[in-house]
Image (cartoon, rainbow, N blue to C red; front, side, top):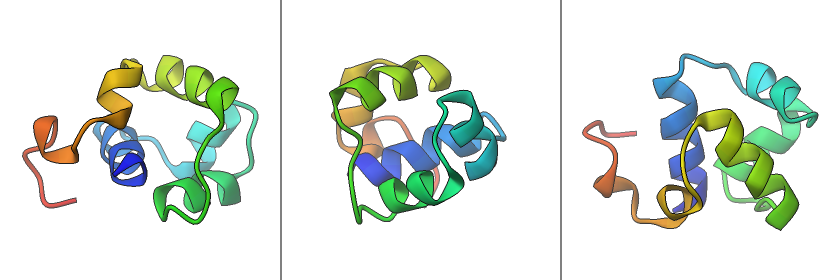
Length: 72
């Protein structure tokens, strides 16, 4: 769920994984791991992530269909 939301909001901003990673000082592989839910951001990373994506923690944690009209 969190990974899908990260991908959805990143794509809405037309950001690559690398660009998002640069915004929050994380490598592209970390963003990929989050989106594929191999790992998840810790609290500090989540705070940076939602600030970069312009969303709230609630939006990050809620079911993806609440915010996405696409099939991502």
